[in-house]
Length: 365
Image (tube, rainbow, N blue to C red; front, side):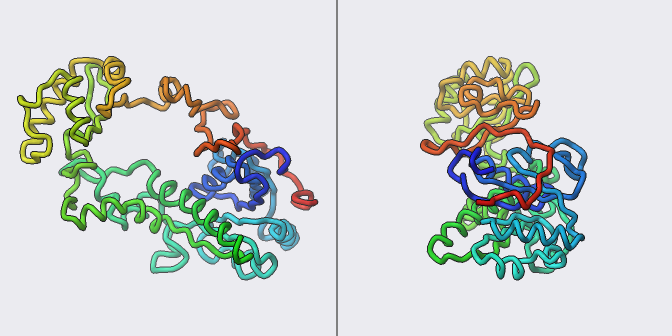
């Protein structure tokens, strides 16, 4: 399989135990950059996964079917793991051990393997065995409390903060860090990737602001949570929306100029007591044109204004189109690999192949 791989991780051998959410997303990121990812999953699933919905997240994989309650299949998977560099799994703590695939067994057979374990709550702690989802994990970090409008309930930020920012991205970071360390020690190790840990860490800026006394625990009154009128979303004349992020004074001055407003007629930008007046002025100005008319006005501007696009519209935006950020994979639009490498660029992802292969045939020199 590695002969067809392209990207900075070409030659890296990864065994993924198929699941839902951040673990397969992390495996996708590794595969996007050239890793040879073999996905171990229950017989008969194909590419449709547990939900029965085709999953582009499985792109770039080789599929191996195995009944993990069958000793013969376990032996075959252990044999495959002997030839691997990385394991990615997202079961509850203890499941891999009960299957006979835990770190003690695996690292004894293959001391160089990096064993990445993705969970919501972590491998230990009072909640370790509890079920949960993205917004449950970020509930304990303070982040979910901070997201939403003043006087209203917290708003789940899709499942982006816990599952993917705090989960899959930290799994990939952990894998690459462990592989780098292995270059010196020659040894693998176990990585405990907990979404609650990763999500907490991505909130470092808010913790800093709070420590400086410039972030309130009251939702929707801070600079970056929609409390500031110069960092918020606004409705346009056609009922669509634009985002305004003119924080720096020079960008705010350009925003006012493009809107036809004069600073001397408005409250001082950072006068929080008069933010309602400033917001009303921005709302009225932005209501005078459509979203796309404002997009044209601000197209080459530093005022930090952008049209808020639907998924359908995103691929058609000139900047997204120029960078080919979204392309069709397997009949559906999908984001392309990121980041981009100058010397070892990733290939365009291929749709997942539902055909399972014999693990005994893989990674044999």
